Image 1 (cartoon, one colour):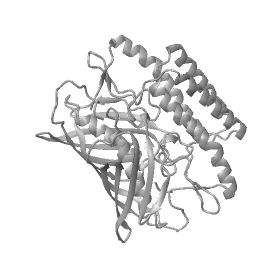
Image 2 (tube, one colour):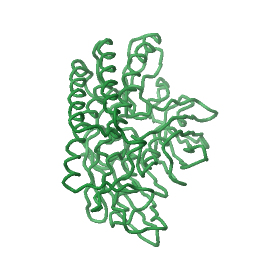
Image 3 (cartoon, chains in turn yellow, purple):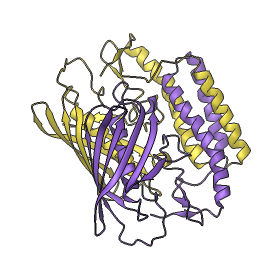
Length: 213
Length: 213
């Protein structure tokens, strides 16, 4: 996959994060409010017009196409457009992952926007998050890996609310890694997954973790 | 899963859809604009405040908790909060599915908000969409079914843009159904999936398709 180098310092990276993260957070609130609002219809149309105005203003200057994979010259990742961890992407919860042993772990909260069956997380969202956490687990040694196959087993419905997802590498051989993972609420595991991940053939060693998620 | 009956006519259902769908569409545009904007920082903060104001106005009256599964007395589904097909949920593309043979099919376009690897759909998003399309396929005979296990095999990266996802039931036995599906771009299949779906033990026959997705 192609990627872009943003010629900025770590300080500038953090400054920009502090500008964009609150904007995306406000959009996350808006997504939730649009699902749950019960205000009169004329206020709905007023809200729509005000949002369209903000869109026009933000689009006055914008990058051409999607955000892409960006890094600073120091190799710090800026996966800010990523659908699962992107701080600029309001679709992303966003997950904040930490390395734990031979894998990664994330604690997060899913609200109304991630619903499938009433009061519960959409099964596809469970699969999406497990895919991401297994993929980051596969890349935790600094060598990125693409998902070959992933199997998700649903043990019981996952309630909306506070959740934990974690992964760990169980096997390595040649360009292949086997990674397992779980999604849990306070009462234990709700879904589990196993994935086969493949390292790219031409691995230069230059891409920080996160680039292939 | 519990569900709510909204005591409204089909006409009122369509009228409400015409009110809320454009609002959610404006938020979809906003999500994209927030990822891609390059306007000066002071305009970013201005946008954040204007969005927060809209959120406050929409939250002046709102339902308690997530949207849930709603139906009209005629049994028309209102899965409007659903993370994949919800017309009120800006996280959802939203997919519009049609019954085709012994399964369902959807054509849709994924932009910057669904990105994983640069220029490509996040693998987890592919899994999410396949899970939904397989689940609807499993329920296309009117009997809902929960996902037991789903396996997704990635054949090549899925580019952002115009895509098609479809599913078909390959086997039925007892409470179990096997469903297969594919995700494709103009050049062919990018990912394929197989799922085992289980019908609920106490199936009353009263819930329209879509309730367990």
